[in-house]
Image (cartoon, rainbow, N blue to C red):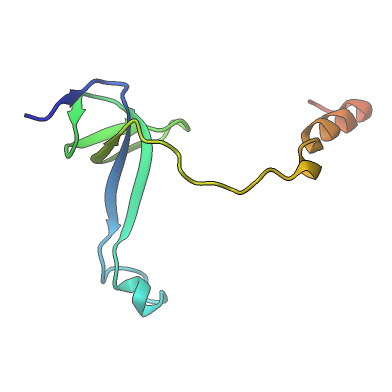
Length: 104
């Protein structure tokens, strides 16, 4: 029997949103030939094991259902190296807003 993961465990779920052949008619043929899939990370709302159907709540508060595919998944994407010129923009905007009497 697979290990049951407790409520609140950080997991990734997977679900086929649209099977191949049911995609919008305007998508290219090579795109239409594959399923539209969803992979989302969130916290289990009830105990489940790898491979089980489960419901999660995301950090944004969305409740979604899918099959548990990974436990404690990492974020592996990258938006590239930081741009030094942009690192001060947030504070500069807050300063401008304070000078104009706007909200912070």
